[in-house]
Image (cartoon, rainbow, N blue to C red; front, side, top):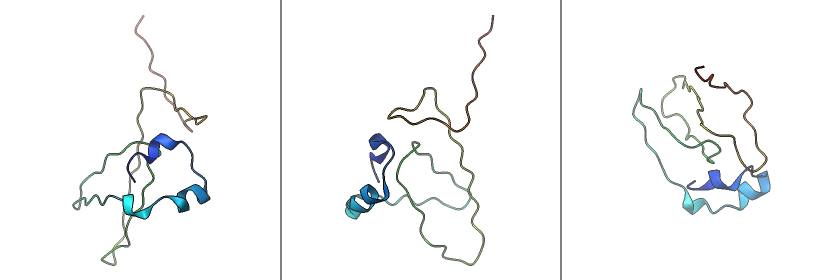
Length: 81
């Protein structure tokens, strides 16, 4: 759902209240990748074939999160001295 990442953490009630007609479908071919912003409200459709679906979820950011949120794990860049 476009721009939902800008709202910070949403409660179940806030998510339910969002208009479903604002959804955007992003079709990704087999072996493809979908790149999106952290916290973007998203979902996957049901599988069309009876095969496992694999997902690798990586998050990269150059700054801290806003709205009182924090990364679970962080790696700090060491400056050359």
